Image: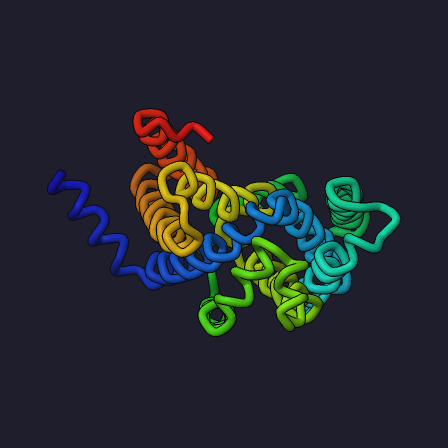
Length: 283
């Protein structure tokens, strides 16, 4: 144990490790907060779909040789999130079918663009890093960390300020509308926040594993806690802890960061599920 602590202390001296921990904690916290709403509204799969859209936008940014790829990735992902979450009820192609179509289409086009126009000698490596996170979280630049901190603070502030409105829309959108809540505006706000979280989370766990940050902490909390507030707080704590454990283990053991974080989420989910069975809460 002393050797592990000494090794961890050694790694913490490097700025890129501290950057990874800061981004990991903030992204995990934001993902878990909106994750509860998405799970309860039956939109768990939206994270997966939007992450594939972000991958396609990233490929487009690479083809256009845009220095700051966020200029393309963020607007494109937000636009698709708005279309999926805010027009879903009135669209001809609805729900999971629309998400699946956008998800697979964006992933295929992104990979096609990277193969046709890429100048990299290691296309497979680039794609693998983008899809699974790999070591991208350990190669963050200072400006990327600052952007993540700013966007995460905005997401947290919006969630705290409009907590009661988000709560109302999550459980009964028709009743919320009847009481005077502008449900269209708040659905739009949720869509934008979700898109921002997905884009930020890509650096942490990669495009294919983003949904884990949204779904697992929320489902784990729901096994034991029942009130919306308790589930939200518990999901946030679980998500942050799993992120920290995943990053530390990945650094010490040399495993992929994203996959290690998701593995920690799975272990915690199984633990909470076992607790719910013991308590007689298997729903």
